[in-house]
Image (cartoon, rainbow, N blue to C red; front, side, top):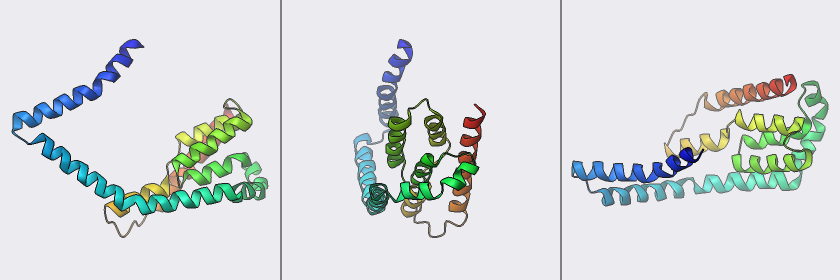
Length: 174
């Protein structure tokens, strides 16, 4: 295990040395290229910042207001037929918008039910089987200036549905 830790600590310095060596051997101005990349990165951050702030605000509003928990209670008869505990439903809904907010919901589920519980295991498995659909699509379409996403969101929702079904089925089988 110490060998893996030692090697992982060396990866970044080796990568930096390799990049600087390659730039030097090719006669490229490494520092100027680094500054250009940094400026481009800051420009991208300023482009996506309004989208990010809007998503985080909306998610926090839904979470704090209790709308998600109310929705989970209302849909609990439907989710129980599907063998999905209603407590996991807010996690499923939030994960489509924000992974960090979903991590907060996951930690709340761990605190209430425990990570080794049926709900904790299903929530953990779901987190591995899903993606932040709307954040990712809004980020990439705004940066790449894509105006028509066509089948991207329906396909991503279907993939999340498949991940949800898989996590429920695997949890209930185990």
